[in-house]
Length: 310
Image (cartoon, rainbow, N blue to C red):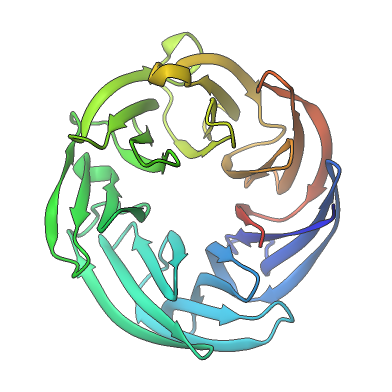
């Protein structure tokens, strides 16, 4: 099956905005500029629309587009670009790393309505927005906390980590009984029970338990919920973790095919990795045992830092 993949980018050097390319049977092709705009650092797409955090001349905010490149709406509400955006129902949630905030907007009749910004702390390192039942979870890298907020955006507790951990991105199991979370500064994977929000176990995701390298970035899980895949930028590697019975075990580290693997996605039986510093997206086959196989295909996408597909 042929898929269209959308790529968010930094636009500090050669990138011009949001890009798309084709994916079919592991092969990548037809990279092209979808829309010219500054710093679409993170985007999410569905069958109806494309939304991205971006910079405008008058400030930073969110752009709403359809798949025919038509701008439906935009809204400016920040001084610098948010690093994350996700959509739940008709609401958009952004996390701003530098400003220490997360914000909520609403999509109605192809228009954006700004609802609220919650300020946590300047330079808190807010890096993601996660949802568990009626709770909103915000990993705050420089606070070494994952903070909870209720549906009315009031504080509702959180998870504390030791100093220097740097919680960054997480993913829930389908039954939402466990949260798997990676840390940027200590390069660890944490298994967290949602029954009491206690850390059940943790491991290093680097070869031989190394700790001197930083910059672990993204995490994904396979459909069978038996493997986790994690990227680390300064080492240019992908790590594969076995998670059966909630006991994580590092079973593979492999070269990402480029430099600075900030984001990646799993699609069919392949892993597509966005390598920012080498201006590339690489496709790897995922083998039957869940490990990552050889490089299958590679294309040029300048300064690519985010991937998504409807």
